[in-house]
Amino acid sequence: MSQNGNKKAFYPDYLPFVLVAALIAVEAIIASALLFPPRIGPAIDLTAPYQPKPEWYFLWIYQLLRYFPGSWAIFGTVLLPALLILSFIFMPYIDRGPRGRKKSLLVGIVLFTSLAVLTLIPVLTGR
Image (cartoon, rainbow, N blue to C red; front, side, top):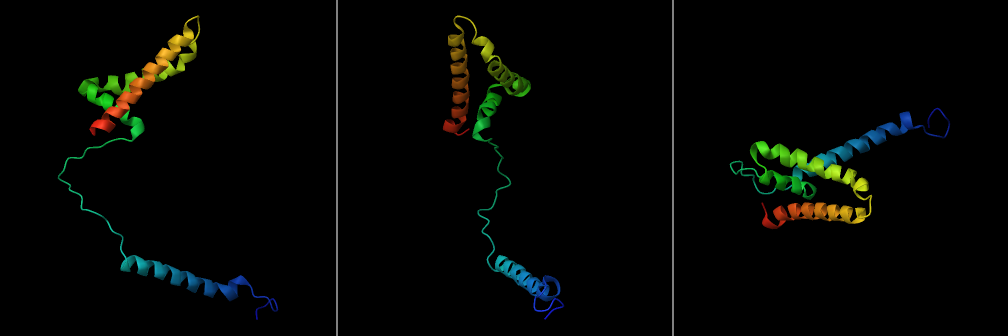
């Protein structure tokens, strides 16, 4: 019985039981981790050259790096994507005029096709 009559308070009455239960749980986790270690898989060959490959949504820039190597890389990785973004920004202004819808549709088809082709080339060739 505690100081409150028939009711037991958490602090002096239940705290030791909770601490013992937490200690047993931690020990069980440590014991299971030591008894059943995780499988790591095959060893890594550190002498093989590393070939990084980006996620699918950056594959078109990765492919542009193959077409613009060396000092031309700034053109393929900065200027062409900037032109792509600017063409999307100026799409409402391309759409104005009597033939505007056809021009903006042509620009959209060219941009989509070029991005799709530049993404699919490394996927299909495995480079």
